[in-house]
Amino acid sequence: MTQDAVTAYWSARAPQFDGVASHVAQREIWREVLEAAFEAEGPKDVVDLGTGTGACALIAASLGHRVTGYDGSQGMLTVARAAARAAHLDVAFETAVIDEAAIAPASADIVTLRNVLWTLERPMDGLLQAHRILRSGGMVLVSDGLWSVAPQYRSTYQPELAACLPLHDGLTETLARQMLTDAGFGEALSWQHLFATPPYPGGVPMFVLTARRT
Image (cartoon, rainbow, N blue to C red; front, side, top):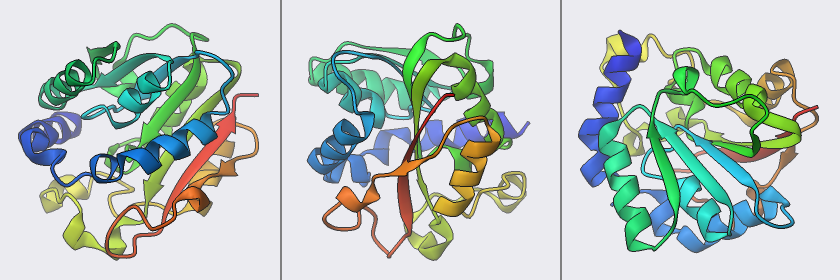
């Protein structure tokens, strides 16, 4: 099963993942970018889908939001929970893959998917789940990149697993905007210009987009 293979892969990588992660090496600039992109006045209910080691979840909690992160990989969540404890942040981490997460409809103000869509067998399901759980006017934040530009810096699956993932090579901002429209979101805003230097090595074209649930 594709999802089981993806989950097992990330669980195996979890102990070393944060050692080379952009959100750790450039923590403060990621915090500044997400704070600006959230456009939040006061605490919000934030759901981080495909949270991994908690990149967006921990930043959102540090900004004062109420945060729940979901991921299918127990290994990744073990690292995320330890990071939350070390930072004295209150984040609820739940074990669930995105399309099976039992999240009440219209229960979130912000949903984040950072470097998630490329890992999904059905990427649109992630955006449709975000749309379902957002309140009217709520915001989805999607960040990803065209990873095939610098494959030496990216995770690699076995060829048979990669072949099951339509966005394994990554995605462009143009494609992401079209997917957000197809999922029922309004016009997307971009935020990657706030990075003073590219957040990933190898010249990877990346984006940070937000869009509202209409």
